[in-house]
Amino acid sequence: MKTLNSLSFLAFALLLPISLLQAQNDKIPVHDPVVIQQGATYHLFCTGRGIGHFTSTDLENWTRAAPVFSEKPEWTDRVVPDFGNHIWAPDILFHEGKYYLYYSVSAFAKNTSAIGVATNKTLDPEDPDFGWTDHGIVVRSVPNRDLWNAIDPNIIFDEQGQAWMSFGSFWEGLKLVQLDASLTKLQEPQVWHTIARRDRSFQLSDKNPGDAALEAPFIFRKDGWYYLFVSWDLCCRGENSTYKVVVGRSKTVEGPYFDKEGVNLFHGGGSLVIQGNENWYGAGHCSVYTFGEKDYMFLHAYEAADQGRSKLIVKPIRWSSEGWPMLEPMK
Image 1 (tube, rainbow, N blue to C red):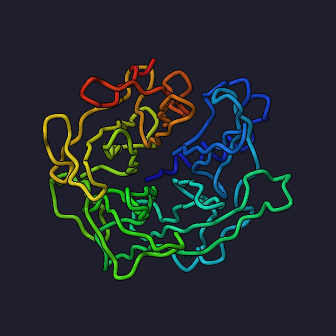
Image 2: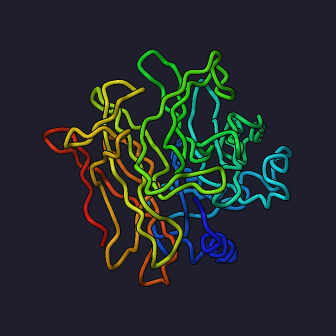
């Protein structure tokens, strides 16, 4: 979930010259990064006006590109009145010759939310086939109807090639639902699971998401396991951010997912992967990929030396002998 602090900083970031962004190496100002490679170029998409977009050839030096949507998708005002085109938490994938970009439209601290999807044949704006086609809403959460929140999508294919979308924030936990073959709609009849949740200290409602802070699921498949990475606690609060990443794993995409101690993520489990410290107030909303022969985690963190502003962090992943991800601490 994004706050006004994150909005104001992202607005500031849009004014930065490209040369400064390049000089900052991997520490570009982003929230909620996802990455995909086309040819020799890595494309990073993130929360921002029209969906933020950066490119790199080395995963270190990044250049700002044009946003995905110069104008807000036409349907968004029906979900969030007077929507400002500040789009959250995308996910990107390539499937059967086409790029799919999922994204979140939401009102702050409410489950007045929807996940949309747009497609493109290429990510190269110089290619004559370049152009985003928006397909509208994939799933929507409605106050007074749903106790879940339709934001923070991530797509995974299981061993049979079935596409699943995980998503969610606060309320009654993180959901997993099947997509149909078009990848733009839910499969019918619908198949849903709750894959992670945390206990609350008080009763939630359509007006209050509760205090069971978790969001941003990302499922990564490796060596016969599905690893569910989840962000706990509070993002987007500068020096008061407490974001951290935890993980569980399962032999099936539907779960259940268990942490190192055997605790089900449905019952509040989660083994710590990375957290903030005196230099970085919080670290979370991760995505995980294999590029070449290495696995990487991309996430954002709030830098103490820069007034708690959110920056991109890229970390290689090592794996323990028991098959659990390990990252170097924040420095």
